[in-house]
Amino acid sequence: MLPTVAWQDDAVVMIDQRKLPTAEVYVTCRTAAEVARAIKSMVIRGAPAIGVAAAMGLALGMRRSKATGTAKFAAEFQKTCELLAATRPTAVNLFWAIDRMKARFGAMVQAGASVGEIQRGLEAEACAIHDEDVAACRAIGEHGGALLADGARVLTHCNAGALATAGYGTALGVIRGAIGQGKRIAVYADETRPFLQGARLTAWELLHDGIDTTVITDNMAATLMAQHLIDVVVVGADRIAANGDVANKVGTYGVAVLAREHGIPFYVAAPTSTIDLGTPDGTGIPIEERDPREVTHVGPTRVTPERAKIRNPAFDVTPNRYVTAIVTERGVVRGPYGESLRGLLA
Ligand code: MRU
Image (cartoon, rainbow, N blue to C red; front, side, top):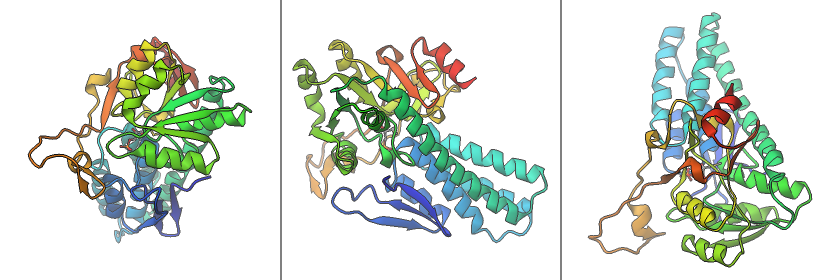
């Protein structure tokens, strides 16, 4: 399996996703601040992977603490949680993972654990979050794989693969699951402007696994659908609101509308850690606005006039009515999502 993020001795090691596919370089983070920087600058990205990295960053930060008493240690823990929570706003997995680490911390303090015991407990919790994410992706692959027909041509957007998770992937997990079930699958990968997660990362990891992959620019999806070259769309998610509205990489909404127009099923694959029952609908999901440079430049080259105004919302929200089904590790749910998602998490 492809390495995304790992706890190694007293460091968090991650493959530098800014450099793929031209260079396979690993970044070693030795402090929580380094992990926070890595998340913010997209060394690591993808909703579940960000959550795992943040949990490991917290464990790492607290392992470095010089505090001897739990009061000072708790104050440092709170600050480190805030540091990691401030990295990226949209993927709810980040906050889910931090909350889970807080719960473990609180339970250990309550039980009278020493600083050393808490440090070891946080490390164990972060590693559990990592391992559970891989298991969730494999289960998503099993459930979602069953939805794809033999010979299916699948369109995906962004990278919801091994690189976006602790391993195996969500949308790409569905593709891997279907192939594991003996089906022949061909993938069309949207390039995903401006950060090119599809062209660089999805293509790289699918080819690594020998999966039939064709990269298209984002504006080609409509014509391919009109030519009956796409049978099904499978994407990941950064946050699923209680009513089933889905925030994912900008461009996903357009693909969903096109899929509806062409009568193509539109599936969202995500672990239950991506479901946010605390946000009633998509209007409440914070959308990250990223550096204009991602739009003005392709690599080192400026492609827009100096004085052009720029917008760079990194995500959009697909209304629930376009979502054929949501595939999670606990099974496949369909609308009305208010009921089905609540039932899934009950
Ligand atoms: O900005 P990114 O690359 O972190 O955005 C990632 C996406 O939008 C993915 O599609 C989503 O996180 C699903 S990852 C399994």
